[in-house]
View (cartoon, rainbow, N blue to C red):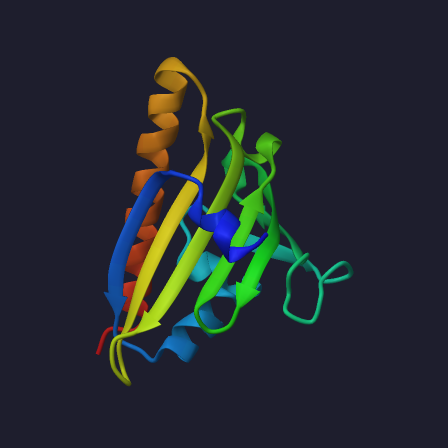
Length: 155
């Protein structure tokens, strides 16, 4: 997925926040699939399949064990270290709440020891109350994950 295509989708949820670490360090941490449980809510473990991945990691499949929430299957769709990382979750993983999910991280250095993370989740939310629940859930998901990332690198 091209960077231009990523810009065309309006977000269901978005959060921009600073992290007290160099951009390369933050990028390496958020793209280390095996450590997603350290900062993403609900994630207990991750199985990673690199067989279809290119040298940039695009095509990597990851299966997140989320306990009672079940498994989530995700595919890395864009990677441009250290400033862009994106992945999609398959529709079944989100129980029909969101169709066409894409999560995009844009990172920018704000100094040698500070990174600005802009995280947007896009897709089509289900209609009615299920869609409202999906949007609120994604906003909460990003908020909790952002707090965990900031704490991870707090000085």
